[in-house]
Image 1: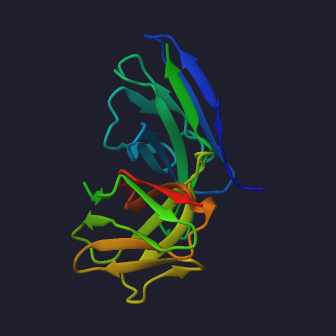
Image 2: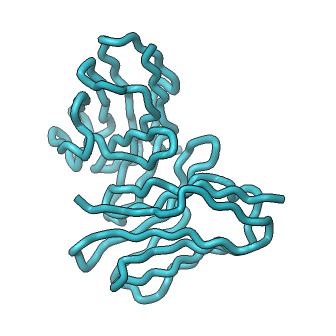
Length: 113
Length: 108
């Protein structure tokens, strides 16, 4: 079955360490997105990529980095520059034709110790 | 940036009754899509309903329907015959942006 796979589901990190969250999709979708969700808040856009080897900053890109070397993969690195990285991270994609509907992975919970 | 506003952080409804969740948005575009997503305790995001802005008719999916007022930039979700399984966070979304969400609790 097609879908979006995020890993790991739970991740613990010490302060000062970088960590990379994986997002893989087999839906043949062009556009992929990363969101951050904090308790009681909506989803905030971190980065998005509409095509391989191209990506744009979202609303809260500081302290994060991404790459898009393959259509199927859009990893997110949470760097030590991110002041408050503890959150739930969601990866999503949009298929073709572009209806705008987002398909989501199951999310990754990052906790900084 | 586009903005999406949900002004009801929490709502509750009795089982079998009807509830309406509000959403407003801001855009200068004329053609776009609007969405409502549901996030149950599992945290998996699920599409509830989609509305295309150029369509006059309000979208309906079984017990879920919308009241889309384009001029007012309003997009509310009505849930009829509420069920316990409807308990979840509901997010309004537009152009990659999401509202803050409404936590809906359906009471038996």
